[in-house]
Length: 213
Image (cartoon, rainbow, N blue to C red; front, side):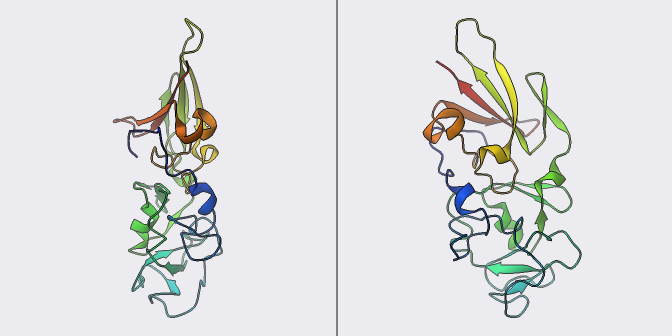
């Protein structure tokens, strides 16, 4: 998770093109590491030998080339993933952090590929939704929510605050909030103009600030 201005987000299309796969060559793939570990069936995936350049893989048998990405059963005993190429899978619009099967957040624009290089499975974001952080007196859920602070407006107006799920804002394919993949067009206009997104150095949580005229 990083602090940066969101005057121009390149991740605006991640929520669409990455809804089903981690960038394979099928119509549901596309650039960036997508949602293969959240969707799909898992189990016996693909063909070929375990640990090959294509076909199935697991932690004991990582891919000879590419990355190993799992299905919806990633955290179940005996889960098997599918080898995916890195070209088109681990580049493109950032897809954000992931939550591993122990409930630990792994940061990075393409965290799914970082884990996939070692055939490490990851699961649903709710496993990392533990604890809260302060949002102007509200309590937002760690990792899966962002704090929205609205400033300005009529003279003398007080700031307002809201907790929003990362999934509602789109872009972060695996449900873990990150300034690098959040899509703020609905809040701030095309490209996120008029908004900024910052990460608290202590809590490691994101706050989106909307500056009204």
